[in-house]
Image (cartoon, rainbow, N blue to C red; front, side):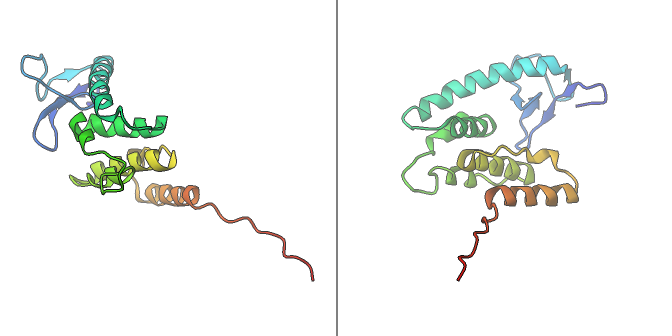
Length: 163
């Protein structure tokens, strides 16, 4: 976003022209790298893109019995990687099975790794953590400690039997 709160067109990590919340600019659209749109326009484009992508992802995921959060995690991954990646998802114990699916796509920089890790936590632990809000080192350390505490609660102390 620029200082006026507008979304600015840019080239994504693979060099594709993009605007808003990850909308890939298609030929014939009025957007280009450097052009701007309002937040309302970005939201509208995001809603349309999401519906299209989630409909396609559902075709690949229809045979799996997924919880709501598991489905949301896979939707998020399909929005970022493309719904075709859902063809790799399975539940047969392979490296693309269940929560392992997200770990196969951790490359392409720290931002992508944070997203995949967040999707993995939503899928496997029902925890939603938006890692991008933690930018300073101390905040990251605090977030990791909070996550560790959530995943590994301390054992309750039991009274020792009296002898």
